[in-house]
Length: 393
Ligand code: SDX
Image: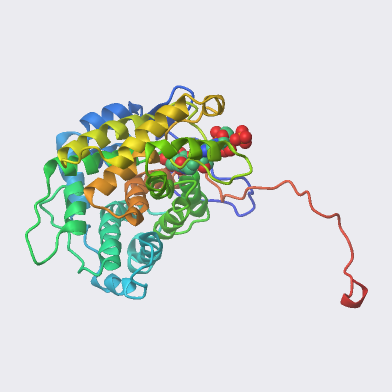
């Protein structure tokens, strides 16, 4: 019984948030996936292995990894009819809008794996999502730049396949640089899961009603898009570009501290971390590596980012408020150097986080205590009163 999703519509509690997947210590700046520190996974593992860990709770044996990679690889193509969805969007539509629409539409194509009471169908839906979201993200990018869609190549690893689908064109051979693929893979790992953040809570809440997993992931993508959440990587790079030079940093620091100014330092601060976001540290090292690899020296955006971090961390306001760089502060610099437009930064966050959303959704569905999410509110409005005819108002 434990593995069958049931809920009694009479319950009004929220979905259970006990979880064995990700641990965060915001004061110490620690992040573990199934007990393994993010620093070790980023340095020694790879994204598909991290997917296996997040989904099944243990690191895979060599045989388990081969089988898992085979299952994901053979689901990377999307139904040919799904290509038509893209043509309904304007070319300049934000790729996040396209992803919300197309991934939601997966519900219409993969109804054979949407009976969430069937553990096997939950497994198939999980694999399909992890396999197809990068393909759909790459298609959204290609569509936005007017280039033809590029099919996945089964002989490529997950990160190389994504780079290939984004950057190769039929007119010429495209060689995936293994070092860049490694950096891309690390970015996927750093974004894979993060406990009960807003988009994961959205997926859990949507899933607690019994909605199919494709619709739940589309809801998570929609939530992630916000600049206070996953949209911060795009907003942060645009902010760094706007600051432009180191001498303009004090002006923006002052604005960030001014309560009358809605401006926030993008890529800074966190609901949970009151210390360094461990992912930001790894991302900062990776930024140096990737720019070096690409022969990009004296990148002005990176210079501004590093100086901004230094000044902010010495500023009493940021010290008092415990504001540190988060995962979004350096990621955009790497992605821009790789050739991605800012509009693709959050889609890359979304494809990385799909495994976390799916793992959390599966955990909740399998939890006998999981009930339909129905948060209550504290009503502070008008007391009960009688209707007033319009002439008497
Ligand atoms: C992600 O939840 C997750 O795990 C999310 C995420 C994940 O992996 O899923 O980690 C990904 O969303 C990272 C966050 C990306 N967003 C940004 O970088 C946008 C800029 N950051 C802020 O919008 C803000 O820091 C939040 C929304 C992230 C957190 O806001 P909170 O909850 O207000 O943070 P806080 O309570 O610690 O703030 C303390 C104070 C507040 O001022 P007071 O009310 O005490 O006067 O610091 C202020 C905040 O207003 N503050 C900032 C600030 N962030 C917080 N002031 C200036 N610039 C900032 N960036």
